[in-house]
Length: 257
Image: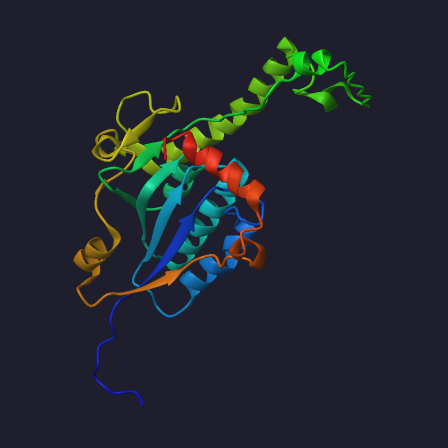
């Protein structure tokens, strides 16, 4: 039964973007997050949407797709998006954070790493020592790019840099478009990281603040915060994705976390 003349409490859906970004089962991906994000923006009449980011980065494409989905829905619904960073919003994690109209960090949050990385291993000496011959036949000279079992080639390094350059440019353009005049006149795009208030000082974040008190400050003490997050799959719940966990652990370890 609906009671007349009662004022509804302000509703703020809270979307959690947790973990490494990628297209695997455990990673944050646009396909995996789409139902969550669409539901958060589409249910009821929210006063705003909050996004909690805790990510060391990952796929630039998935980062771009998720951020673009949030911005599209925010513009369609005419809703402000408030982002709160936990341990980190680094690399692709910061790409996600820039989907917000404002970004708040903890005193110890790691923010930034606006760059692109390619990492691998090389085993040519090991193969030779064991007397193992590597045989590769390709149609197209680029199919064996950065083969870890062959000595590194200068032309491979140049090709990798040529691949990284437009991705880095897209990342920089995204940050500039979203943060605009807030950014300090500093070299923010060489993959450095900032901690807490440092990120605020250079314009990568808007303030130090946490989700609940900030939302109460903006929307009243009776604000309803409704969480929306990606459900863990069966394999994940039973710990059967060891390789994916190792890959994510490697991303976090780059930040010392």
